[in-house]
Image 1 (cartoon, one colour):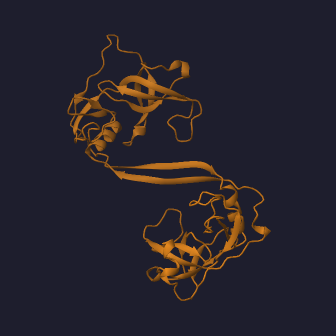
Image 2 (cartoon, rainbow, N blue to C red; image 1 turned 90 degrees about the vertical axis):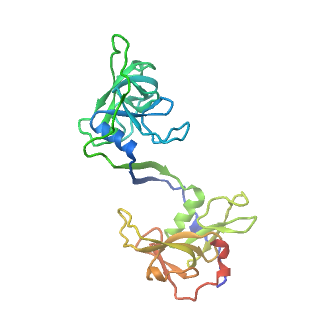
Image 3 (tube, rainbow, N blue to C red; image 1 turned 135 degrees about the vertical axis):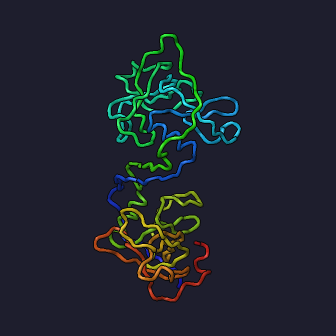
Length: 330
């Protein structure tokens, strides 16, 4: 089927550039090797462990391979719970989920017996109370689970009267009920502004229409529009309505259910080249068994209620598109 395109009317003009808060959040789960397992389990037991390299340096936090030689290292040692600030920066406005909810200093602390420093928070009344070289000690969390947050923060302390510090001592790394894995939440909060080109694109979608922009040089039509041609580097001002039908160029079968997504697995996510567009967009395919989705399948959008974008695409019943008609978009 030959592509078609239409010049949109004035309704595609967005009255203003859009913006909205956006949160990207996911839990990162990983298993622990013997070194990291011993380190985090040690924190749960109020023990700080490091690892000794072949040339005698003690690294805290410990790593499994020497960063200088790449040799595997397993020689665990216990260091002190006190240390020295090597550098710092004041944080006047703590963000949510940071170690302290009052202003504090980010510090690099070299534990007694260690040769490297660990980054954490220092509870101090103000920046005038913080200095490089000051002595600090661990303030342990009341409830410890085997995570870096078992160190609630550091707090200032007085130096030993004789100036001595604790030396690193060998440690077996063995504990009852060792920690073997962690789940670390990752979250990014920001305000997204799509710009004028994509604001017009989103405004058109609200009217169940898909509008791209044509490059004045290479004549390609980009959907979603970017405001400039990624190939020619020139501004794209000519708006072109495309679709609504399109062709599946490639696809994947999703077998893992996402949290808070009310879609049964398996389902198909595909790249779809809308008629008249020179860039494939991605969307979910519905209305067909997942194992019958194929390259060249002709599809059309399905809108739900007052949704601002298609809920999914379904087969149109047309014959499959010839591969040569979409091969440049695979």
